[in-house]
Length: 473
Ligand SMILES: Nc1ncnc2c1ncn2[C@@H]1O[C@H](COP(=O)(O)OP(=O)(O)OP(=O)(O)O)[C@@H](O)[C@H]1O
Ligand SMILES: [Mg+2]
Image (cartoon, rainbow, N blue to C red; front, side):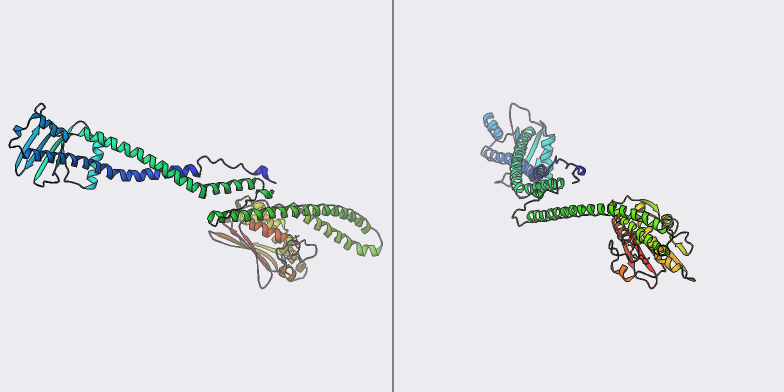
């Protein structure tokens, strides 16, 4: 087979499995980030609430003492460290009490964070700000302890404490997310691998190996029992491969048969050639009987040889894909009219009505064969009529074109198709309605036009014969 021409299948580097795992991990991480943002904001506000709560407890303690001056440094230190605070301010009904360490100067707060303000986006923004830009400065956490609405406490704390806890929290969330993403993607992968990837890989491998050796029936895929789309794909592939295999076998048989016919034909043509030589000599004899019969003999042999030659040509004619190039249609038509002996014909008028600047993209050789054959057919149909006087014989080419397609009409005012030709139109060897014709011309022409993605149609007319060549632009 034509295995040598098949390109080696490309190696899959970033296959379905890798794509799937990467995509699942990425998706889970994106989801985790979306969950993380509110959660980190929540963590910060809870942390501040805790400070406020502890400060509220401290406020209770202070209430029991008539004067804050009476608090011992030890009690103050305990109160402050329970809230991790540097200093506390408790405001009750216009009064405010300050609790600070005696051994340290009162710190200056860089900014205030009020726990009563809880706009979600704002909370997220502030949490991220601490996380990325937080430093060793002091923040003033303001809030109302839960159990006492009349009291407002202000806790002065070092921002670095909050930042450190935020970092630890974020790191934990990151590792946890990664773990969850890995487990999930692995689980989904295992599931999809069995369900999709493995069957698809099997289908792909089978296609590659069948393409490399379509003669081998063992390469036809054996479909599984699955009822889903993969099962359908497997069964369809199996059916397609079986059909292809059968078609190839049939083609091979036909090719073998064709070869045998061509060989026989070849020898037959040579034998007829020898007979033709003899008949030429016979034609030179003086005998009046011979003189009368010889031309018919020569003519018959000529036709037989031509027939053999056409069959051989047809056998040699391979379906070559057209090589498209821009072609001037009017010039091509004139050229073909010359080849078909239509152009300078003494009795037949040739009307090329295609405008000068019509350029179409076709294979010029193949379309020339089509046109020449149509024009030759028309001439062959008209020539017997040309013997009768007073007839105006003509062949014309006209065009209707738009952006999508060109429709070229080849028309003559001859006798029209014979019933036999009409019945077997475009059928190789069967369509000939004239003596000496092989009936191959129209069949080949149709094949060539169709290879261009077009159509060759016979158009019924009142007089003469009209063919239409439809080509996509
Ligand atoms: N313009 C025409 N006018 C009348 N009959 C035609 C015309 N064109 C084709 N035919 C008929 O159709 C038949 C088939 O044509 P086709 O070109 O396929 O074969 P052919 O001309 O007989 O042989 P060849 O293979 O040498 O071309 C012709 O024999 C002829 O009878
Ligand atoms: Mg012909």
